[in-house]
Length: 349
Image (cartoon, rainbow, N blue to C red):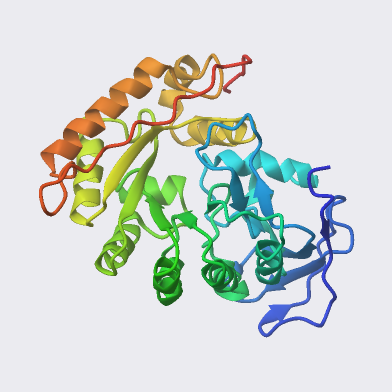
């Protein structure tokens, strides 16, 4: 069981604003403290507070990501992005990858103290740590639980390099801490903005801040002295991969002062695949044949499609000056990470 390193925290009574909670515990989280809150922003959500036994996690050697260590203070995500690749991790908890992933969030309430303890361990060598690479560490729950200030403060105090990828504007709350950390170590900040169309945002990413608010945050962080990259991801076939959408999105990213833009086509791993396919079939049934064709061989669209998307984003970036820095130096448009070969045939709808 992937979650056997978790246990329940001592129950010291409900925090302010919490309401009694009665949902049954997942089998994988025996004894966890369950919270619901009576504020509108948390309507329909359940939080399972646990004490993690470890918090700095090594990435599996087979992963394609360019980092080795991560910190994930939450599991599940109220951003409710239809395509989120992390959805299947909820099935390790005997929860489903659909509505449960959006509404039942696991909170590692001891994350801050645990990070500090693990950074102090003699075996830790100060490797780069990535955050926000599974679920968003600045999702709505962070406003209540405030785990990230403790984590950033620990990384600052140990001068440990780290990076954060987010869709959340709550990161601006921690800007003073981020600036302090950047004085003693490398701090990388990135935002995810796949498109700027507001109707598509409301449909596909209903729990996130709007793309415009995210880009306002990019500008604020840039003005504070950070070079902020934007992951233009995912680009959704038939919904945000046309020239008009790409141009509008790249133009907005450039105007926000981003240091780079990295395009990435939608990929559909198990769990996310089924949830996204159900949504497409319900909201955009005319696109079902196209998705069946693009994803017939597995989780990734054909490399020819990915290369073509990258080329069109590159052209738009040049058109809007994103390829040049303020003093004329080149800003590189990174290549997307090549997908692993498809290993299985999957069905879509």
